Structure formats: structure tokens, C-alpha cells
Image (cartoon, rainbow, N blue to C red; front, side, top):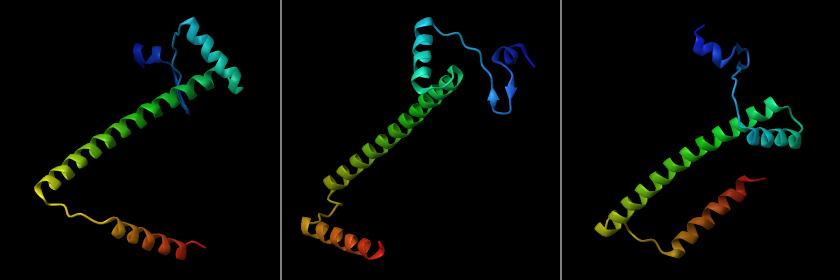
Length: 109
């Protein structure tokens, strides 16, 4: 095992132990969160880390979705300007929704 790997901690069946030095004020906040949740400090640190990583993943997915929506909106706008999009009346839309709701009611017990 390299010195870098050794400083990161030993690997166990559930993952790898990592030693991290945190400022006292952050430690106090994490300890308070551990008490609030009724969990150990290590468990809360893992939970908070996981929660933040999931938030970052969600933010990335949301950003990609927003970019896709923006591109689709611009493409639709361009098609409308070019006259490639036909309009549908509100009554046609309402009829489609009524038809879909009726079909859904038939399927739902």
C-alpha cells in the first residue's frame, strides 16, 4: 500500500476509512446534528456527505434537463417562426384530456 493510500485509511468491507481534520465550529455543528438525529458522529458525517453528493448529482441532472428544455423551446420557436408548427384549439386539447381521463378511469379499479 502506498503512503498516500495509507494516509487515506484502511479499506474495509463497507468502504474505506478516511481521516479528515475539520474546524472546531464545523465539528460542533456536526456533533449537534448527531445529537439531534440520535446517531454517532461518524454515521452523521457519512449521512451528511451522502446527502450533499446526492444534492450535487440532482443539481447536475436538473441543469442538463433545463438546458434540454431551453434548446427544445428555441427549436419550437424557430419552427413557429418558419411556419412549421400548426396550432391546436383549446377545445381540441380539452377533448384529448377528456378522452385520456376517461380511459384512465376505466383502467383504475
